[in-house]
Each structure stands twice: as structure tokens, then as C-alpha cells.
Image (tube, helix red, strand yellow):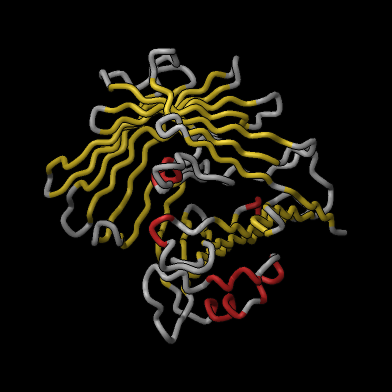
Length: 346
């Protein structure tokens, strides 16, 4: 179910746009044997750059998005993101670059020692602390490759900064975390997250416990009783009392090549139905709403209210050349068109 977009991508959009444009993976049908770069443009402006090494591993991505609706009056430049990756033994990521033109510039280093994985965070040192939500690092647009990234003044600055341990994970024999220790900014406490698995890749129960108070902060339960589906319930606690419950589910139909996500909030069930082509590329996403009657996973039918639709059109290389969005609540339509350059390296 790797194509199902994170729910947050939908929640940050304006009322007009129920989808996040240009968030699908860039994936060639036939990848070169050498390293290569895919550059995407919209109306002549570079929107995305993805660079892969000779093992077809992503090592660099630049992405430029529109100014968020709530910052249109303050910002003069688009929101920009850069990710970079270095790999070690068994293709494990050992370093991740996470640059966000608004939120800041960070490098994560991952250290492995037998069954332990330690995540170390290093942040950009800015002598003049910028104001929040001013998009202060928009000039990262000049970084257009993995080489640019590793040699940039920002990276040199970050690597000279203080190393902060963010997470220490105890891993099982499959390399999956079974205990995660961290100083949580969200909970304002040192916490441990304990995870039990039904089988490899399938979390069964996850509990977040405050180490200072020894209180349960959050519990996540997954139910796999329906074939090719998982139901998830997230329960938040404060002072040993439930404060909120969030339910969602994902279901996959391998016969008609579709996947569906369901989420319930305040008595409303929101459904996103994804259809794929023969190459497993998403071609359409339909959004529906209906009243929640206690069942998370329900059939797609004409009784549901269709609220939005997204369609993807691809070229022969498997790259999206057009996205078309329809908002049935407002009757508005919007589209994006893209062009590409593919550069192979020896």
C-alpha cells in the first residue's frame, strides 16, 4: 500500500484543493544501469530533481511546491525541500539530509551497533535566529545535486554543530524496532515506545509510555482479521484518561488493482479509493464521504458522496505529465502539466 498518500497531505490543502499536487513518486519504467537524474519542470520552472546512484537508490531530491495558502501574503518565494541519503552495509541509510526552506535544515546520522540503532540529529547554526514561518532558507534552490548538497556551506555548518541523540531503537531479528527511547517534544517527557508484531512488517500493538510519570500516553492497535486489510485505532491519553480516539483502515484488492483508505472523525467516514494500471502506477484517486455507522471498511457504491477526484496521465517512461483534480463540493477543476529531462551518468 505504498502509494496511499499520508493523510496530512490532504489536510494542509486549501478548501479548493483536496489533493496535494506533485507528490507521487518519480519512478521510471525502465531504469538505467548507471546513475541518473530526472529533472521535472512546470511552465519552464524546475519543480523536482531526483538523483539515483548506480544501484537505483535515491540519493538526492529537490522539490518546490506552491506557497501555502495561509502564508501567501508573507512569503515571496515557494516552499522548497531537499532530501539526501547516504547508504552503508546492506543498503541501510546511514545519513539523511532534511532541508526545509521554512522549518530549517537538519542532518540525521544513523549508527548501528548489533541490535541497536541510534539516531543523531544535527541542526543548522544560524547566528541570527529567523522569525518563524518566514521561509528563511528559500535560497537552498541553488542546490541541484547530491554533490552540491554534500559540499554546500549549509552542510559544512550543520556537521560542525552539536550532536543530539534523538532516538535509540532496539531492533528485532528482522531489523524492526521493538523499543524506541526518546526525549519527546510532543509529550514533553522522556518516553519509550514498545512495539509488538503479528509477523514481519505487521505491527500489532504500539504503546507510548512516559518514563517520568510511567503513564500510558498513546496506544495504537492494528487488526488484520480481514484479508488484505488492516484496521488501526489510535488512542491518546492524558493523566490516565482517554482524550481522543482516531480510527482508520487500509484495504487492498489485488484482483482489480485497487487500494482504499478509510478514516473516521466525529461521525464522518472519509474514503479514498486508488486505482492502478498494469505497471502499478496510480491512475485515479476518488474521495468519498458518508456517515460513520460503526464499520470502517465498507464497499464503494453509488450511495457514497463523491467529493473529489484526481487523475494521473503518464508518458512512455512512466512519468506523470498531467494531473487533473476535480472538487465536486465546489465544482472547481485544476490541473498541472510537467515536462522531464533524463540524464544518465557514467
